[in-house]
Length: 240
Image (cartoon, rainbow, N blue to C red; front, side, top):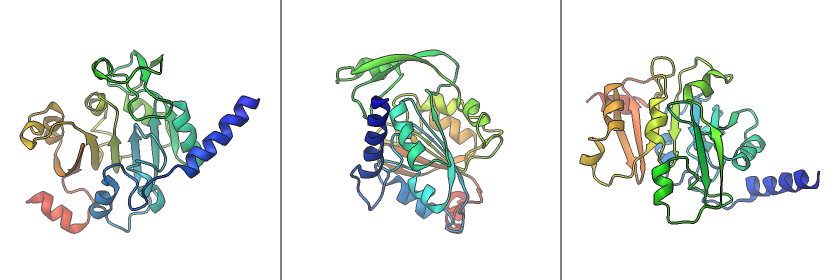
């Protein structure tokens, strides 16, 4: 009982008193770019945030939440999803590792509330930090998570993927026929645009009709051609 009370008050402090820059909430200003891309009158959009980390700090979706949007937040760590249940109780918040197949994986953490938690074996092998702890878990595909949620069958307005080495595999688990995200934010560590356009991830999105609209540090922002949520000027630019 005492442990539960301690965790509850720790979660309150972590959720509401964590320091963050208030000019923007996303780590590299992705939310500012989204604000410039999206029509301001859209107040009931649907986001999916994979690797959501914190409801405010480094969040690509918190400004959308403030607009009145709702959605699905997914992370592998229970402590992180506990904060979403506190700050975004009307969202569908899920503790689960995501992959393109159902499999048993090892979740490795390097700090108690850090950014580097991963199930990707190569990324774990290359990590410089010592492993804090690890546990095994069953993965689900993104389609499974969505179809088991209150948003089943709904087209995604904004999909944000930040999954420490699993981004491409998670992207492959998207049912583009059913959910077809209008905007996709996804990490890529290449430093040259020529290398980016040769990646399997870029080729997949290009084949699905997406255009690379912006690039902020590690995050690529793709938009669906002729989507109805972009400001008119953005639709004009993506057609050209």
